[in-house]
Length: 90
Image (cartoon, rainbow, N blue to C red):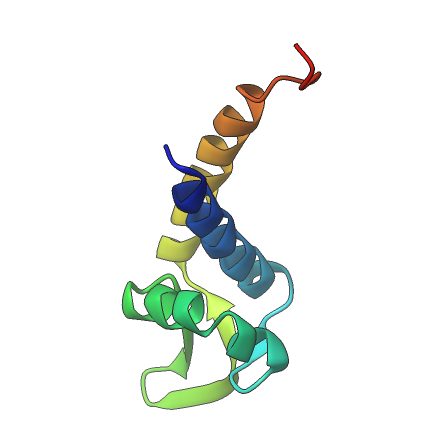
């Protein structure tokens, strides 16, 4: 797995974790800075601003699908972190 791949996984993790812990405004600085990952996560159904069938809010929140994917990302990133030597001089 390349460094770019790991970076993308971390960015998706950060967006989903943020939406899970503290839903963020659609037009927040966080949403702007992570726009590609926010848009992709919304397109894939991992986050949403839908409150009810016909009601939408001003915050991105995680969906059930997003919670599942966040768990998968956590496992993947934990595995990757476990492969990094604790002493880079070795």
